[in-house]
Image (spheres, rainbow, N blue to C red):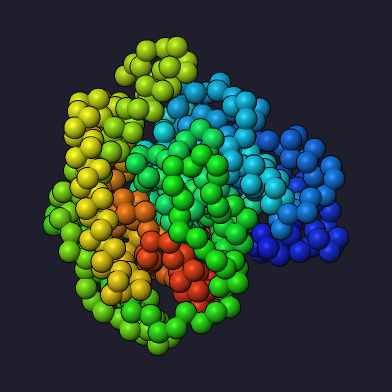
Length: 473
């Protein structure tokens, strides 16, 4: 399995298909790696080994990833008969009675799920340190954050427990941990993957689901397997006529790439993150792209207000839904301080505030859409800092929103794409002097994952990262 840990999901699927390894052998070896590495990282919080072995011993599937091990983030991805906690002790015994549509599509693709991964409570913060399960640790430095909220999935993929894992992204929650853990992480266009049957959209369309991977080709092929409208969806992404896997061998052409490192007034970007962007700019120029230093014209204070209204309202809605499910009235002593602080904030907004915030976001989305008429891609940092020390986002009952404010300093760039619905990706092109990965953020036009995949493939070939292994792997 030490040798197999270098293989991505596509390569493992080929080994199984050619019968060079049996699915049960691959699953047993993966279980062994998880049991060896997880005590050091705390990435997997609900093992599903018996279910996985049963699947591996059964009839071989015909999907493109038949027999390949996979992990699910413990948020939104319902797997029938397996607990889903949302990272809160209030759902510690909740067991869904159905699969979500995305899980159904993962199964149809042939993936074998071995467990659920660690998340912050309700997926609210850009770090993974829930009270219920304890902190997830970064395999590049166990004192640092994995990012969040898909931190457990990122740690598992980066440490090579599995080649790919599910994630979702409401403010950067795929791209942030991809950056912190040295992975490729793409947030698809709004509506590209379904959220049914339990949700039509989440947070007025902020949330998108996909995966974290070590290779670009895995991300493309998995999106090929899961994309598409589900009956009853409130809307869908623009039609993608080609397979994303087929885009990878296409020349992206000479792209007009806007570059901005401006985090807004009152914020700053670390030298490491600026160096990551500057190195990428040089690489892009060498590859023949046009680089233009320009920032979208944004009212950042208004965006922050609107995002906060929708985010806090979503937190309040989720907690109220949990209360309805459990039959227990929400109580501050059953939630972490920052969760309760956002709950109280959300309950304080009026319906008119929420609708105003939606109108603001839609107006800004039109403005950003016009920006992408002139430019093909926008390049920014993913984060304003290298992975920070665990505990940096802690809040107290006296200052419950401290962690929320700290999150705003850490992630000034990623939330915009959740508001506008555009595809965006974190690409692992830089490691700092301390050996910590720092991703670079590329934003595409609404509905245009194809351009991002073509560019990502070009960058992966020009500056490969696949053989980089963290100390814990």
